[in-house]
Image (cartoon, rainbow, N blue to C red; front, side):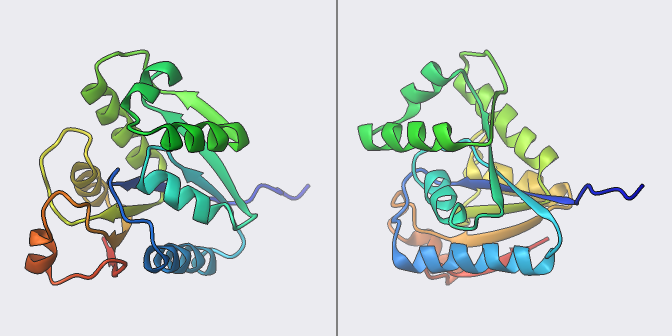
Length: 190
């Protein structure tokens, strides 16, 4: 009897909460996802995202245009605690919508310590993914569970990282000038 199970490529998402969601980033996300699908044409695809405001929600909305992608949502905290970290009603509304259409949802911790919960989330994403998509400004801030730390850990674990450069609004473009990057620039790391 033939084994009908297909390989699964797990794509994780990390990124800044403050991100200018524009057409340049949309095109970059679509290029990355198309490239992953072209690299692995006979597989299933799982997108792992905690649906955070900003980058996560933006990548997920773009990725779900590809019907072959299933959405897996690992929440760092119980939903009611997690939603306290959202800054806008719009972000909470988008979160609930995406959560309702997810193929699978899990809560990783019952912890109320947000920093350690986000660290657990970052470790989970790295452990589970084959590829990481990072909407990131390239700055290693040292924040526990932050985008830079997740990227660094993914690279240390030998994961492929598609870095899509974004200005997150916190550094007045200083990192961009230093790195000589433009929003939407794509670089494959690892």
